[in-house]
Length: 264
Image 1 (cartoon, rainbow, N blue to C red):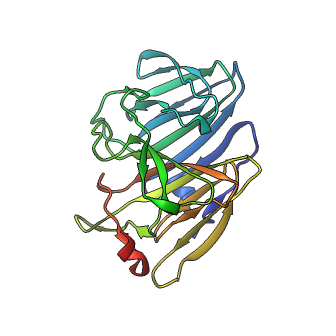
Image 2: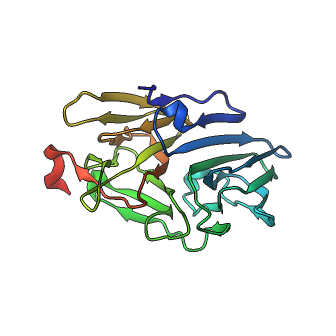
């Protein structure tokens, strides 16, 4: 199995490029761009659909034959304001030019031209609380199951306060047995506040044949091919992550780990 923890290539340009081939799975792709004002990037979606997430900063974007103007107004991800995003279907091109320094996520999964290009957010994205006590976290849903403008992608942002747990109670979505559970591969793009902090993510199966515990740092990505995948933010360090999920069915159904099922 490929290493689950992906460190960025550097701090400028394309700093992550995760493909199904490099991750050892079938559906999810993820790229991260860290651009300076005036720099540009472009691509053709091919057989994948794409959601471009303006994690930080602003850029002018043209995609699928249309000028979408300048997207983005969140200059620091920990402002927690709703993101500006753009959905681009398969077999279309996109071009962006950074108008400020920016961090841009490119989320990918198989597409079948079932949807048109469209802006996502900031309207319609509301920061909502999930969990309670030390399991409290805050969610910006970008393209989850109730939003029907994607073929495969499920995308969301999560803010975990310092000292709290997230993606908890531990759960898995690694079997294709709907409606009990769905098979979804998943990436976590992590940010920490302050940026020199760290968080913890564990990926493990019930039989512990897969059991990895990782210290995650600012701009790291964790790949979750199967198993449970909780995160912890130590006291003093706030955690953000951007989730990308995809599989054969665009439904999010999961099963809790037996020893925490009573907490669901």
